[in-house]
Length: 225
Image (cartoon, rainbow, N blue to C red; front, side, top):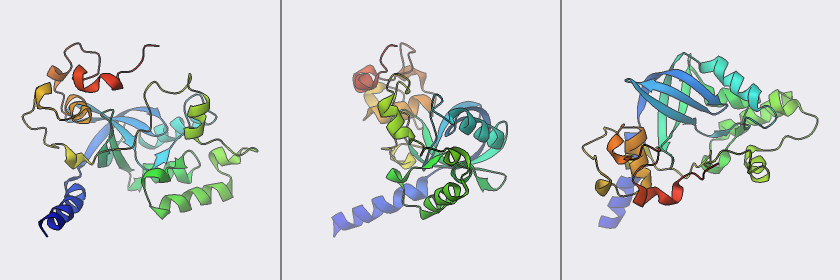
């Protein structure tokens, strides 16, 4: 019985502790990644539930431009769902009362990414875009999903996995950025990345190479290019 109660508690804890906040968009990296300014700190946000074309892929430029037009320099509402293993926040982004994530799929500028969600709304939006031949679906040849494109173009793909959405809920770490300041206090590389990139704990990155706690994160260090 005690084990059952603990399991039930763990199920309800994560959604209840997910963060929601407003922030200003200061950069758009591609069709599914933005940078926001929150309380004077830069936070990189990966749009949840979608997968946009890579920059070097067909419609990569158009996808980024569409998202740029939607959110650049605007105040957006961020509904964070998780942190990925590279310290990015995975979130739903709303602007002017609509979801930027869903809008990218509706306009044919991104695929729905059903590996990590069961939201039929995104599937319906993609089907609508396909039938209307919007965006990337207007191509004569069926477009290649980014996941497959990255496998076939490893040299052109990002150095670190762009869509590492095997994520931890935000509540798995301390969203209030508690008193942890040293690598000895970190239980994993994910936690170290969270405290470095989201809480700004620079003491975790002694050599200022962007990778915290070398002993924990050595295997995730980006290869030299």
